[in-house]
Image (cartoon, rainbow, N blue to C red; front, side, top):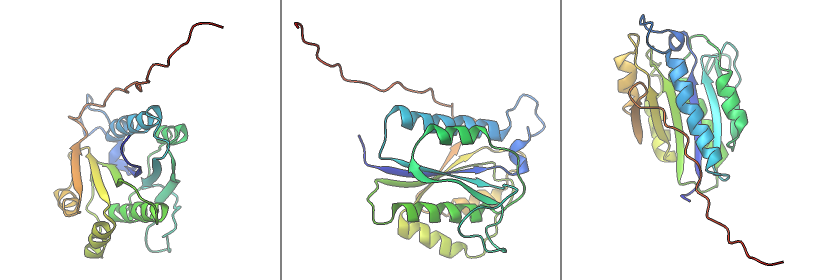
Length: 210
């Protein structure tokens, strides 16, 4: 087994994620996002990666629940679950996601980074990653962006974006994410949702006799 991994899922629940982009044959971005992330969660459980940690943050919730909120910043961002062993509870919470309100993307990434760094402090992990699922339908507030980029670099935080482009996707938002160190974008529409793989189990010797 590879080294321990700590992953925080960030799911965009803003209104644009719940639209079909004017094409009745197209899935809502949120449905596609949840499909990808559920497999990611369930595969870790099936692979018995008991030392891995996973957390869940929602961007655009009507309520606010995170440690950084100060009445002016980080509003409408909810930490649904802190870093903990991957469990079916996380998969269930993904299925319970509801449409939210407008909120700032970078705020959500900072909350996720704070969760990830606090949860892995003084511990060794092979990968510390934030997985963002979004259609990037609005441009984030860039105030303090350089400081945020520096924090991600210093902490060696990997940022992966499951991008579900629609007519509302902003090029500026894509350009800003592209400035993050250790960044990778994945096309959420053309990337097939993987099937769950059964865990390989070594055969156990059976001895004859009483």
